[in-house]
Length: 466
Ligand code: TYD
Ligand code: MG
Image (tube, rainbow, N blue to C red; front, side, top):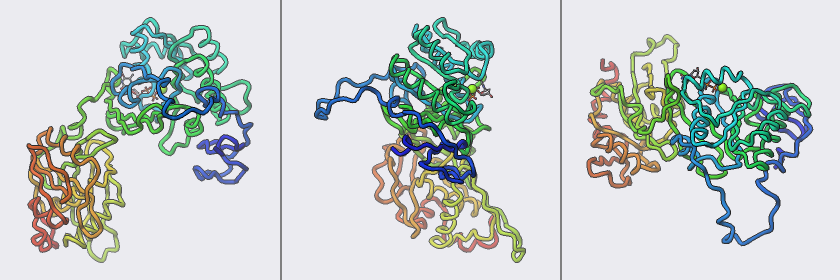
């Protein structure tokens, strides 16, 4: 890969470049490329010595076996657990709960008598202890060392011989043999390369913590992704307790799983039954509310979408009407508004339109097109949609309903949570026994099935129903 042979790197995002340039091709920042003595990363990222070719059919057997961490949501994302001797990078914004999560993992492992070492590079052992007391996670085999020098960390590992090593954070650790200020790409990469080698040689299961900001602007994690076996991304909305764990890169298992946690007083608690996570405060019989059965990875999640349509700025004022979408893509909403206008005669052009995916959910699923159109029409007409109804289909520009993946799985979860009817495309699979499939070929047909008469709605505008 060209990344490994290049000798310049961006100090902002870590993107490598074969030659110097004024502007980084990765993040667009100016004057951020610095020359690097390219470390021999390829040797450290290899899992073993170069081997002889063999028939693929005989290549099985000598695989890796994941060891459960005991935290079910972590094991779900990792496809079983941490693989001995593997290197994992846990990235996330500051404050999201990375240190908390790993302390809980280490406490579990240490509780089983497996020796764990936590390198506290940003906190003192006293601070770690305070957190551990709060989380009630103090175990005999949980060791801690405060250090920011990679050689000290290596020495500590060689002395203690832990099974699991956590370095919190890799950005705070530097390698005295490498030039450049602490936290620079060169330093972070050198330290991580050293630790990756240690992991493979000493069979130490290693987790490196990396801080990432929203725009990925902090040096480090990006530059490390190719060095590690697994990248875990820990995220969530700052204003909500929900935390999501994913594995965008995973050499030993799936990258589609989603782990869900809630940040509580006592640390991170698993959300085992996620289906109704976003529905707990839902009020039924409200105009401008609908439930979408979405899937995230392989996990079905039911999300409430809400819409509000209000009179816009006076005609001729020159002020454009407001379009606001939270947790939904603005471009997708504009498209759905255009389809409503052109294919169903619901003309919301002059009105202010607000849409929300409730509870901090983020919906990028095309299956939300139809429910979004229905909820906008419901809000405009002031007519609630039938209770116990879900809708799921992608909308074509011609107003036709199209099928989305995993529909049977989505409807199964909706049925389990008590929904009894679903508006779906004509080609949709059979619904579960307790659910009626209402098949519609077009948006207008779907509106009729949902109790919204497109003909009547055309006469509603203007004026807008209150
Ligand atoms: P932390 O794990 O320190 O985040 P990171 O390592 O990703 O920077 O946790 C950050 C937040 O979590 C902090 O604002 C306090 C909160 N928190 C709880 O709500 N409950 C808890 O039990 C703990 C330990 C932290
Ligand atoms: Mg931390």
